[in-house]
Image 1 (cartoon, rainbow, N blue to C red):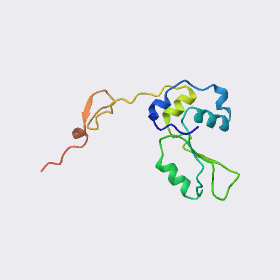
Image 2: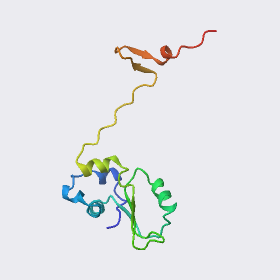
Image 3: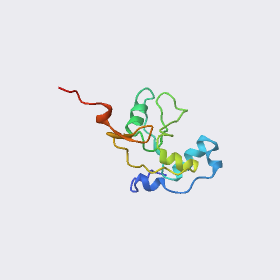
Image 4: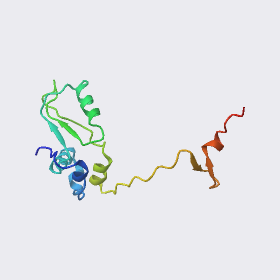
Length: 128
């Protein structure tokens, strides 16, 4: 199955958890990712020295990539980015992806006693 690029990644990630038996082997896990449209595959020959890592880094944080044609290793395939997307991992293992809340203000925080302190109080300005 070719990768469906017409649907956004966030839409493809949503769905039910796979049967736990699917996750007992790498091959079955890759088949499940393929069937869900969450696996990018290529038959283009890639150099295992730096080319695979270059492609992997460019697509870091997206979906797993399966290279079918690794230069100098005709009997091997290589997979990268298998554990790089937390939403895919959460779906695979049945966890809820936590919503990202608002980050706390960098200038105001709570002290151990619960009182608010500001960056100015922690780092007083020099007096002239």
